[in-house]
Length: 381
Image (tube, rainbow, N blue to C red; front, side, top):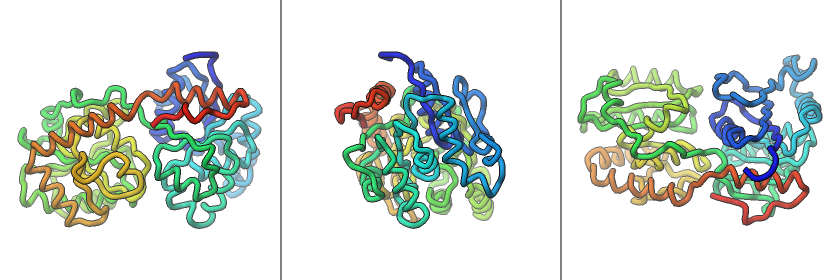
């Protein structure tokens, strides 16, 4: 790290693994991190060395349900006066960057995440809130071309946009982390099982229900197939659990909540990784699977085609096309050579394109703090 430590105030979802990885990268580089959020129920180990504030408890009014939303902007402004950050970084245009815009705190970095500009910004109130957030930004950081385009459509100044893979840290991920035999033993699966792995949270947009139904068809033709649904949570978990029971998948499919420190081994230990999200922006789970040498079944959606394509590390399908997902899975289950070729390609691509972005973020923040317009050459993807 060149120069003095920075003091950074984040307005963000503190429960998100993306926020926590971004923050950890900066804390480990010696910077002072403050996070204000409405979601602060986190493990102490995940926020060690950080200062976390519950926006619902910042003052008397934010403690009052029904009234607090009118006070979030002033409350963030008051917190910024106390913290005196060098830079404020808001993650997600709604609600977090919107709150930061209402607070009128600068210099302000805004990072659209995905759904916020791909979907929410198309209708009210997301349209107005995203526009306010993006127009308040002094710098806009995106992690894909798809998000850059959507941000401009939502009101962003294209000259302020920088591409940085800020949300992903691939240190420790790689094919060498695999322990396929241990994974199968853990779930009582036979040694010749072919493990289909999903790393997506249980949300409507991730279409895990399509994967489960497709797997039910696959296992009838390929009895070696097994399904592991590994996620940190999501509102759709209960319906997916019901679907698994309804289909009688029993010991053929398993649920597994994985903590961040266990991800590298898990990501490398499956045989096929599936991602069917309808909206995305260079998702960490995709890049982690690729870095781990995994072949993919990928659903077409914005930003995915920036990393994989049909025959380029993946079998590509429409996200809700159960027939196509079934066919893609059967092809990869039956063809270990194709799995190997796709996995090698994916590991190579991530090595070539994804690097440590801590120094890039530091340069951008320091330029803003000094009143300089960050140089476009400082960006990284």
